[in-house]
Structure formats: C-alpha cells, structure tokens
Length: 268
Ligand SMILES: [Fe+2]
Ligand SMILES: [Fe+2]
Image (cartoon, rainbow, N blue to C red; front, side, top):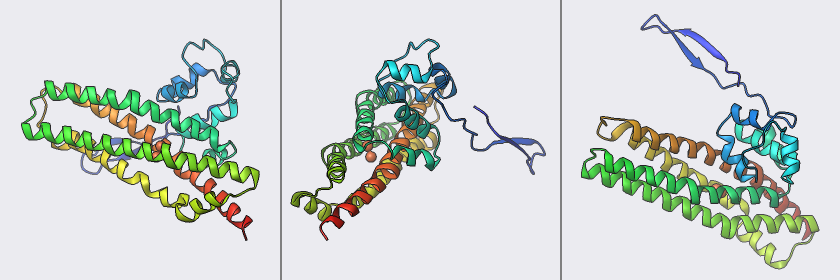
C-alpha cells in the first residue's frame, strides 16, 4: 500500500516528525491475485471468509476464485473495496446490487461478531483480569463496561435482524413488483427507515469509552502485553463495525428511503 509521508519540523525539539496522511489506497481489481489482496490489508481476512471464500487459493486471481466459489465478482470487489476505502463511490456501487444480497452479507458479519469476535474479546478480558494486578474497583469497572457494551450490541443486532432487515427486504420486493399492500403502507407511515438511522452512535461511543478505560485509567501494568492484545481486538472490531454501519447507513438507508417514497407515490 502506498503511504504518503509528510515531513514537518517540530518547533519544540527541532527534530523532524513523520505524519502519515490518509493512505493512498490502490483499489483491488478482478485480475489481482487473491493472496495479494490479503497482503495489502490483512483486515480483509474475515471479510473474505464471510463472502464464502476460504484460504488456500494458491496464485489464482480474484475473478477465478470468485467463479470457483459461485460468487459475483463485482459484488465481491465492491464489498472489499468499500471496506478499505471510505470513498463514497463504493457505497454508490453497492447500491447497484440487490438489497437482499447486501443484507445477507451483513447478516454474516453479525454472526461473525456474535460467534467469534465478542467471545474472543471476552476471553482476552478474562485473562487480563486474572493476570493483572487490578484493584477490585478496576476489575468491576472493566467487567461491567464490557457487559454493558455486549448487551447494547446484542440488542442492536436483534433489532436489525428481527425488524429492520426484514423491513428493508420487504420494501425492496414491493418496489420491484411496484405494488404496495395496506400492511406495508402502514409500516412505512409508522416506522419509516429514517427512524432507525441514529441507532449506531451509542454503540460506537461505548466501544470508544471501553478502549479509553484500558488506555487511560487502569493501574499501570508491569507487562502491557495482555492489555495491548485486548486493545488491538477492540480497534479491529471498531474498524469492522464502522464499515458495517457505513453499509447500513450510507448504502441501504438512502436506497430504502427512495423506495419508500416511490411506493408512497403509487397510492397518490
Ligand atoms: Fe448490523
Ligand atoms: Fe447496525
């Protein structure tokens, strides 16, 4: 990955400091080797797994691996490029794919959080608690904070899986058929998708606070290894969650708002 490095003089020390600006990201293309995509950004590993691709792809290109796994190459490229780049053009390109496909990818990321990442972080926090000389108050603070975060994430995910995603798929289906039932009209009037838009901010804030407790407020450890491991997991989760929420807020919500408006116009 190319990185732009800016050298500026530090006024206090007269030394030069390096500032890394936003990485200049090279987009991943269908002719690139799948292995090279991973070398470029290892955080793509779980993203690729969720899309149904497992390791062991030798020197095959992305296009070949996608074909062998019966996966739409364009969809694959849009998802992984959107993950690596916050450029809105990838959000727009995702809108070209069906709401059902995007929702199905998001459901897999939920499973990954619930079955892999959260238990992993929980194990690491338990190890940290066992092997660090935390005071009783610190122990309770970390434990409670993590439990609260977990509760909030679980309830957010169940709201999406039980109500928001099925609603999105229903709207997309009605839009495709250009037909609006009385029940769906009632849902649009009472719980339009705009009412869900603000949902993510609390979860992001709680995760940020949890990281800050570990970074700023606990007794200085003799050995920082275990604490660093927990923090690295939390930073990785944060990046994954922010990509996930971006797809929900920037890809699906605007798309569903447009469909709701078009469906309401049918009744005028
Ligand atoms: Fe979600
Ligand atoms: Fe969400």
